[in-house]
Image (cartoon, rainbow, N blue to C red; front, side, top):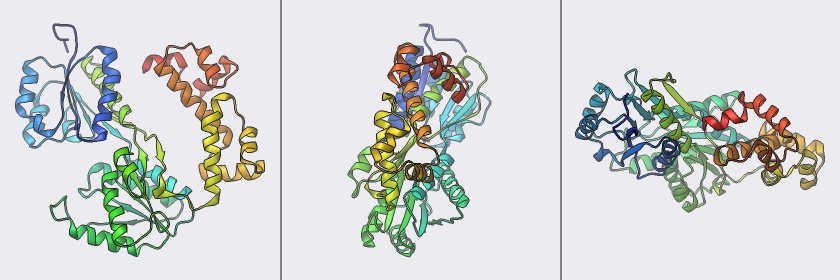
Length: 391
């Protein structure tokens, strides 16, 4: 693939910019593209992604596509499939039916498993539930599968809501009525994971209609961590935070490989980041409060050289009790949590600054930079210098 006459790669990026995921995908694309000096043309919604645009892109010697918009008609999909330009699709497999294409996705099964693990950690619920996306899209199906799979390890079988609607129809009253009845029937206290935050708003509204208290009777967890929705919900909605920026970054990285005719995986999965806990999943187990205090202390003090003994002293309980509760809920030791917090900061500084390894080690609580190098390589299978170059 030849570069444009100006020496820059010409890339068409089509992302749905009316929502938070698309805008965050774009930040990841820019994070990679700015290092390469790409000439980017952006399309912001389905109405802009037309057969004519695709045809003109080919005439203008565009080097490749990054597409995260489902088009209004099949003609666009067919034109892209027949074109010779490399294409990377974000979460839409229809664009990836030929060799010079790559699909980049959130690991939706991992998202479902993270949701189940978080709800399990909050206390002894009498039931668990999952509410899918109304259109039953692939990412919703995978999130449900991960949720069910993780709960099965604990011999728990969740209730899965089945809407009477086949799609997002203008009249949503039948879905609302069915959802109210489904929520009422769940053994209380119940915890419910919802496929995405917008759908979680429907569940919260149904709880209000059913006069069910959130989170005392129904704890609710969404996905996307859309702050505009989550912070303004009543009560504020807990939500899983996918790494949308990393999805965009990996999409741009994959397109660069295709344009340079380098080998790359045909499907790339990106892990979720974490659960942002708000009032909709307030813990019902006293042990969780203890662990949350430990986690808050670890986050604030890990890079200051804090040790497990410091965490225990802060909690004001016995070492045995602190260790027992932390492992019970987190599935790891406090020492491991301290190390992971420090390494997360190491990676952040490696990717966002030009600081030396010695300075990064000191800033992250490692007195000996050689020890940090050993731990980093052992954990990630790559040296810090190589990891920094790959970002």
